[in-house]
Image (tube, rainbow, N blue to C red; front, side):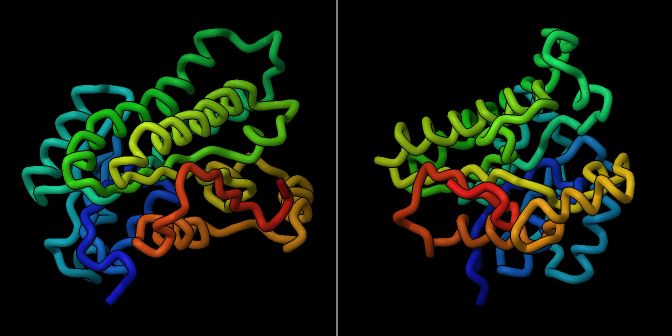
Length: 256
């Protein structure tokens, strides 16, 4: 028996480092998972491995572009037809980290670049909530997990487009908690610090990598599996009186 035994969950961005870790953790904890991503060939390859390790009927895959409302509504309809309910949605999908955009100063950043990030991170998460919350409201239960980052809390001198989007996501979570809490629906934001995924580290020099590891009291990078463990706990029934909160996962570098 896992803490998510029998729960029906959607995980977006399932081909990335954090997304795939979330899928695996949820399966380990007994959930049924519909994994969505744009890179469907990569997703299917991952799913073949998951189906060998877990019951095949507990892993389902769907092409998903979270910035496209038709794609989102189609996926939600398929999940409801398949399972009859949605217990949790984990909005991992986010705009790819582009070093050039990350390093641009405010005066160099275009509105179009900001819109591009917002369209995936904010609008994508909003659309998933919009289409899944209707069934959760009927069943008077459900959990949403949205993803932010520590610069949305502390500010930073780079990555403006990303920080704006991640800040808006914190607001989205708070709104979900206030509007839908009375219907038994909970929402959380996970604000990530230095988590060791390929997009996060491949552009870094050895010195930069080591410097970021030293930022937290734990003195190391976090692992996707550690993020997934927090997500699984929050989607379980255990934190039933916690709602609308931002949980920082960064080894203690940001304390507030």
